[in-house]
Length: 502
Ligand code: F6P
Image 1 (cartoon, rainbow, N blue to C red):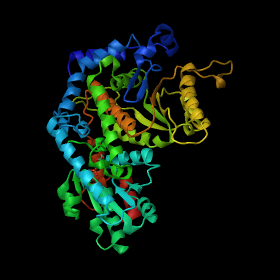
Image 2: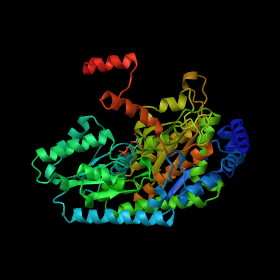
Image 3: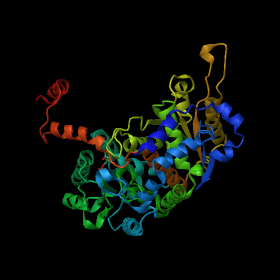
Image 4: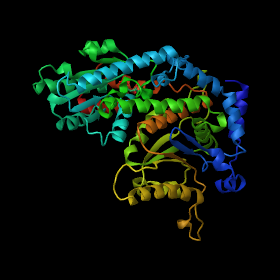
């Protein structure tokens, strides 16, 4: 980072965004400039405070931060994750990357496909249930895909178990026939405590249930094939991906296996194609018309200029109810950092807290704060034009009019003589409208969020691909469990003594 970077940031931090109403009055071409249609998605940034006046300031920041060079380095497979000494090759999983990485990803997908064919031909015995065990990036993506796209598939019953709380595993297996259950252990490292304990308990359940060869029903999705072999997984059922694919970016790799099996290979391939279409947009669109980059500009505007501490995502689509939790990991684990790539303090706010829910439910629970609370919360609405059901069309009309009305109300506000009934307005929102929710548009949507995370990281000068922040707590838990020495504060020691009697 250099003086030009500091100057560009100073210019951003001095911005005084005009009210939305003034922007609409002064900029009749807002919709032409701030609505982008790409890959079956319509991104509408018109109700954000991005403007003809401040866009050049953000474009200058992108230039000074070397955004284009960093993005091109990502897609070229260069070492964009220097703190872990490696590239970030999730785009190659969908065909957008260095040729040798794309070829390697294709070979992995072929291997996944062969195993899916074998399972469908009952080569592993009957399979009706899929028990996917993983946590964080090894769970959230597959869970979202199956929940969003698998409701009508009816091919397999899938349970994704992540929590080490045995209640989660017990609940999942209670409804499963052990003789028809495939155990899929998803762990990049194959050492994560929660996942390994769940895997051991699941295997014990098969054994105790009299399954003749429990290991014949075990599949491993991992970047550590040796650890999976040591665990007892047969080599033919290990689907190894490369360690340059990070956990929260891994659903495109073999981590997506359970979803590909449940949804069918064609659906998985469409998901990859949709993501690749968004990759191409991110790579090739001009900065002024680049949806992930514009979204990152708006993120920086709200976090660094108007002081927003969070951003809220509301899916007006029941099938996308898990999107906020998926995005929490993607955004907060990636950009929840305080140190720049050059080792210096960032010195300004980085990732806001991502939270959200599903519309219309959230309107009746948390929207009070959005309309009249004391904090600025940029809101994102995500909805699909086509309904997912054949019920009375009134359902979908109601859903969409509620979604649009909330964005309009946040922006317009309403004065009143009664302060309690006053709506201050000028509340920012972005609307992402999908033509329909299908594997292709979902792939494009998730790739858009990945690209936005990357663009934000580039503007801040941070590395979105490491996650050292999660390590200390893990180490302390291990020490408490007897693996390693560590001193604890008096309050924690008292808790340990109270529960474990030590
Ligand atoms: O603890 C955080 C984390 O490392 C995430 O980044 C990752 O997605 C998750 O744990 C699971 O890790 P693994 O896939 O190695 O089990």
